[in-house]
Length: 85
Image (cartoon, rainbow, N blue to C red; front, side, top):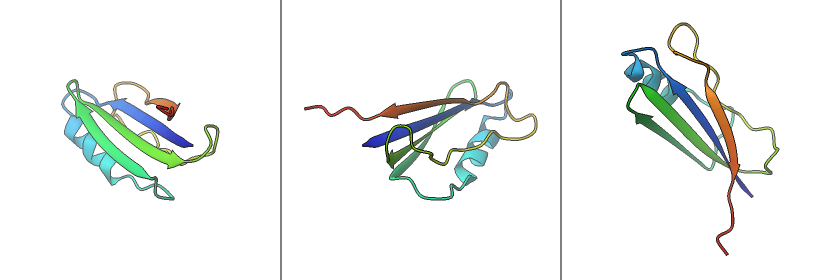
């Protein structure tokens, strides 16, 4: 089964570039099948990692950035792939 972990954060006003750089620099203790980092208006950053694991497996996730980089707590979601057949 493939599990996708989504990590989304909103930077403090004008600090989107700093949050993006922080997210890209974060290393996980092991490598996912795939990792993608995206950005959106409003200084938002989204990181999606894909894992070959059961839905409820313990998987490494990005932490919360420290300091006053964020305007709110990080949002996290977990999804499983659905077979198209």
